[in-house]
Image 1 (cartoon, rainbow, N blue to C red):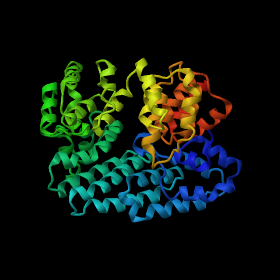
Image 2 (spheres, one colour):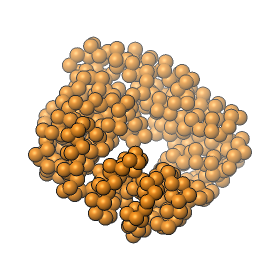
Image 3 (cartoon, rainbow, N blue to C red):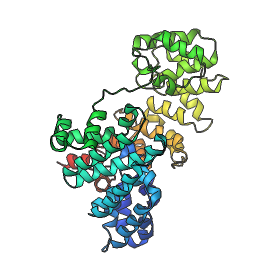
Image 4 (cartoon, rainbow, N blue to C red):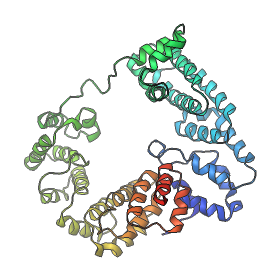
Length: 439
């Protein structure tokens, strides 16, 4: 399946560069627009799209109009609270050695720090300030560290909130500081700034023992504790249980939960139990048939959680179960179940479903899990190569694409065309892999 330039651009896919290189003027306006607004799918897991944008701009003899477009968007105060936008545009400007523009933004964000707004309103500014500070340190010299630590310390002095909440806003910067100065980073800071109230306060606050989690978080969850949560709140979400310490539970205790699932009569509680088994750490430990029986429950949440749990399992019965659902129409969870229990003979059937599947940000729930499952199962010789090709071309998530590319390399599926695309991928981990593959 081949998509258009817009799809590959949104995906950060190297094919966007290859397409634009063939006719740069045709795509000038779109690349200009890409200079004004971040277009990453998931900045936090993928990283910035700035690498691809920089390469696209390099297709033109004069980069000045593109740089001016980046600056214009960067100067917009609206960007100050948009972490993704700040990350993307900061990276681009530093690529083009526009350090003065970034310093101006840093000073603008610095002013925001000393606002008397509630902390909840300050968090977006703190995140943007932290990112720009880190990038300036990486781009220039270690001296910037003293100034930033002093700024943050002064901010700490101006606030009345719990010190742990304040410290949590700058953990990334603090980790970066330790990378630059070594394990004795606080001593190094004080060595040259012992008279600075800001630096001293930074060291005091960031030296406090971290207190992560909530007061109701348990250290070692047991099946009895987890069931007590469910008895009190039958419709409790898995995310809430995680926050309370669900993932500290042993697999032995998880087995007890599975046994409780069998005898539980309250379908809401049953659904909450099933939700525990929808992640890789706790896969359903008993016979899959016990779950299949509940997959057609009249309780929508129970049916959904059970099918999500089934999508992690390998069992001959699940193959036929998935086929029976998909013969009635597209169902993303059923596709995932089938991929985990794939047979070579399923190739034409599953491709007929995937080739009709739109891939957009709006319908992420339909395709994202499928692309991820294809990558996870890429080592399975029963998985047709055509599914890896579909996932490589289709997914908008370069984190998933990285896993898929690893499997393409292992299977010897890299054509000259694909190798050229990988060189220009927005995800540097992908381009690094192809360099290693060529060695």
